[in-house]
Amino acid sequence: MNHAIHERAVNTLVLLALSASFVIGNFLWQGHDSFNLWDEGFLWYGAKQIIAGQIPIRDFMAYDPGRYFWSAGYFSLVGDTGIMALRASVAMFQVLGVYAGLWTIAIALRGNSLKKLAFLCITGLALMAWMYPRHKIFDISISMIIVAGLTYLLLNPTVKRYFLLGVIIGLAAVFGRNHGVYGAVASVTAMSWLAIRASDQGQRFKGGLGSGSGRRLPAGHRHVFVHTRLLLSLHRHDCVHARTRQHQSAATRPLALDRWLRNRRRSHRDQMVPHRPLLHGIAGIRYWRTGLGV
Image (cartoon, rainbow, N blue to C red; front, top):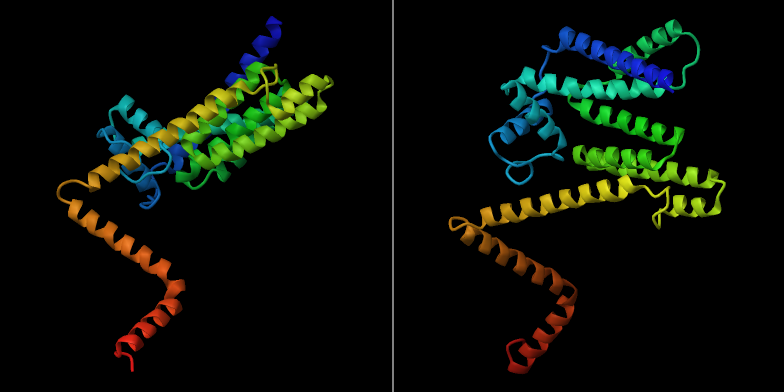
């Protein structure tokens, strides 16, 4: 037992060292090159706005807030808000993605340690070449982390691993709602497959439908993913409400009221379009009766 724990710890450290080596080497090689104003600049701007005390979506246009808070947290730690600090924060997240990818591949490798290490080095180079452009590293890393979480569950489906996968999916939704949806669909598919393979009929029902409180109930999905999506929805609602109140201040209220009246008139006009022939007929009869239409 102790030997197995020691071996897992050594493998984890080796994979982390490999991941950090590849990311640091790539950062030293081309971390100072080029600048994408539209995408990387947008991320940089959002992280700096958080440092200034603003909130994504409510105070400035932004994607889902996870990546901004990650970068802003690194800014706070190092006391720097420059572009190189932003790239360093992205590189730190990239280490997690590369580690997840290498771990997923390492569990399927057999043979002596030297061959495994050589194969993992080649795999690491391939992953680094794939993780491009720089501003997409968050999305690519999250995808690999979700795959690693699914693999971890399938190897030994326990309540602890269900919960851990739920945490991963919930955090993925904070970084991108699309990743949360993809991860949820993939996890439901994996849990359905595990439920079909279950020998116990009761466990098959609980694992496939996700009802009750059995051992196969994905508690992580229920408590983390749902609560995360609820918090994001409330956050967006508060942002929209605050933005509406801001636009309807004393200076802009007449313009807002005028825009609302124009939209109402346009709506009424559009609703009357199908009835125009009838209205023309009624108007013609009226004119004919009053002698104005002859």
